[in-house]
Length: 305
Image (spheres, rainbow, N blue to C red):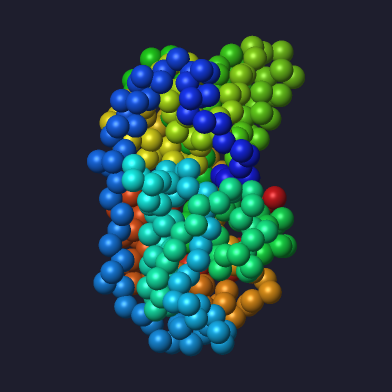
């Protein structure tokens, strides 16, 4: 689950840390062939939903959405530098329903929420719904994402993820600022308190760098969003696999300003329309993660803290 993100390290710096950069280059070369954005050009504008927009909204004909484009398959940059992913497809689909064009702006993850309603119309960037966030902004749920482990194909290191205490003595890769990082650091504390071997948590600025470490064998497993874990299998041509069940699933939401409830209502209606028409499910199926689809675009759903 994605809570915040810090400044990214460059790939060159990552290669100084990791011994598996050659393997990473091999699997990263597959990325262009695995990118298959959903075609939203056939989605028709819906006048009844457009009518929900406040006067003057989207007058420039563009829905400006912020995303931290480093989190495949949700939002990332293709080899040409174009933003792609299922969150990007959702942006374009919502825009089509509202009769405008979608434009995704790459932004630092932890800067997005503060800029909603001023610099950007919305944020669609794998934002996990939390009480802290819904106290500040509105969030329309669209996908349910948990956490999952990846290991090398065949699990040669015999990693056991059935209980986090069984990870004591292992090295687990996570992305900086994610819920998975917090969970693994808590697990490391539990290992220490139980007098077990050290659980080493290696934090990377980008999830792709963690996968690099796993492919290269410098870490034993990665822990990430379940959609990200599933997509890593495809990107690496099966050099890594998922292990264990999806843990702690929670909704993610489209972020809009609480100061503009009419705009939020229009966004919510557009998302619900895409769900009702089966378009959202097709978008996720296109990225290999259809099981994560929600069928109700609930506003600020109650979640456990």
